[in-house]
Image 1 (cartoon, rainbow, N blue to C red):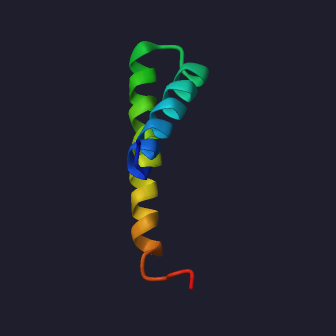
Image 2: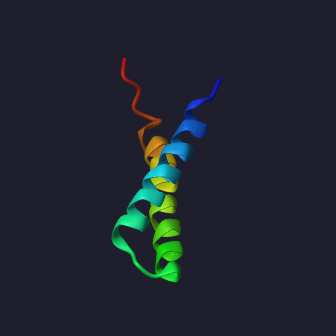
Length: 58
């Protein structure tokens, strides 16, 4: 069974591949855009999780 982190990385991977093929034509631009989007999604979610950590729901 997959945990939350691996599902988040898989989601970031699929979204980054989709948008890099949708918006970029050149192979070099696609790779650059892929790593930028993938990093923003995964690292951004981890950073946001750490920012929200001191504020519990209940």
